[in-house]
Length: 79
Image (cartoon, rainbow, N blue to C red):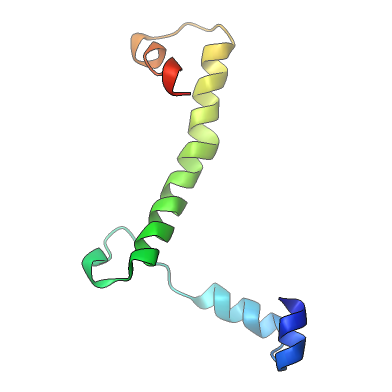
């Protein structure tokens, strides 16, 4: 991207600042009025932390041989 910026005369810092200032729709957005890609981006971002942090933590608890409550034991096949 830096090469593209140089080729077009757009300063790299200006591009980063513009991208950072873009508004990201929140949970209460009117999703039926926004493009589908906005919804997909939102869902991906919302679930990223869950997939990257919570699921591995549960898997570690299960594989470490700690006490498995019934509800966690039923999740084993999902991980």
